[in-house]
Amino acid sequence: MAHCNTHTTPTPSPVSILAGSSDRRSQAAAIRSALDEAAAGINAFHTQVLSSVIAMKEQGLHRSEFGFSALRDLLLSQFDFTFNTAGSIAAIARLSGKFRILAKAATTGTARIDQVAYAVRQLDQTPAMRLFARTPFRAPVASPFDASVECATPEAMVAEYCAHASFKDLRRHLDELWASIAEETELFDELGEQSLQRLELTETGNGMWHLEGTLSDATGRLLDKYLKTACPPPRQEDTESTSEDEGEGLLPAQANRNAEALHQLLAGYGSSPQAATRHGHTATLDLVVDIETLQGKDTGRLPLLEGQPISVARARLLACEAGVIPSVFNYTTGEAVELGRAMRLPNASLRRKLELEQPEGCP
Image 1 (cartoon, one colour):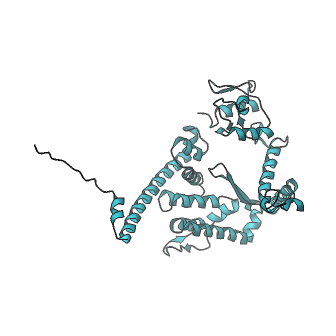
Image 2 (cartoon, rainbow, N blue to C red):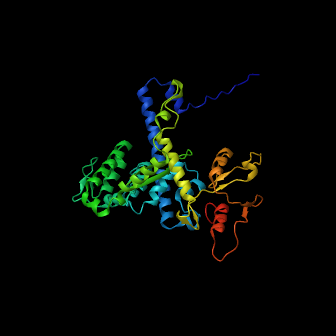
Image 3 (tube, helix red, strand yellow):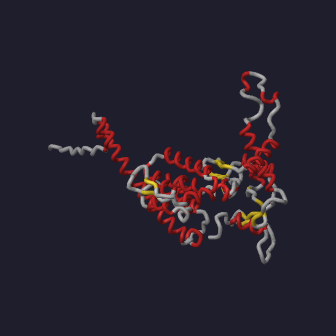
């Protein structure tokens, strides 16, 4: 009896076809087409998301319905967005009322959200820059990318760079705007030096923070004086290595010591009676850890810094300089107890209790 063997040849994938082709130019063209199509799809999805987030922000739904005050935290906690994408979308949505031209460029797909997000962050850094960006030119200026398009304001010109230029050229153009502000003596005199200073603190997503800014002469001199007081220049014997294997000296680099001095300034000021307060307590970090975990016992619990898990070693380091506030926790219910007594208005202890129980706000 004859047997018939059925053999099905699998359909080769596009990659297999390309790999077997000898025409490298055709391979490159096919790959370019596939990537262009994918990029267009990703950008289209981003515009839809941004439009929805702007609508949510304008109606205050992120607070009333989702229980979040920060748009980026909402996108990260409730939806599966990456840190950078959530940050870019949130930045544009938050500033969409100030920079409507740039927001429109992002929501219509004219420009990518990462380009627009960088632009609005730069333009929003000082009152002077915000005013300058929206002040009309004396006469409309033609776009360097399309002579038929006339830009009425610097913001409109920035939108053209977001749509047509590389990120390098966009950054160069924004740097030129900063330089042009310095040359506008009338604007400088009207707004004053204080309005031109800025300080931007950005979480990088890898456990570190990026600090960047421009300070007025008085603020810069005060900070420089403090850093020199807290960590004066090292003595000659501290800078010289005792052997060729010891590197560049006994002390860390000045920049590292400046960062440590800034930490000590903030930590020390936080415990000062003269420090600014909010809801009854100063700008301090909440470290939650039980004594057994801090002692290194295997409790199965992790220390929490501002609601985020950290290592026991880091908790021990922070506890060395922290002001300890004894707290009693019910680990079965997750409730913090014995942090104050009932009052008609919440005191500092009760507010701290609520923040520990509901770090994201009321549900």
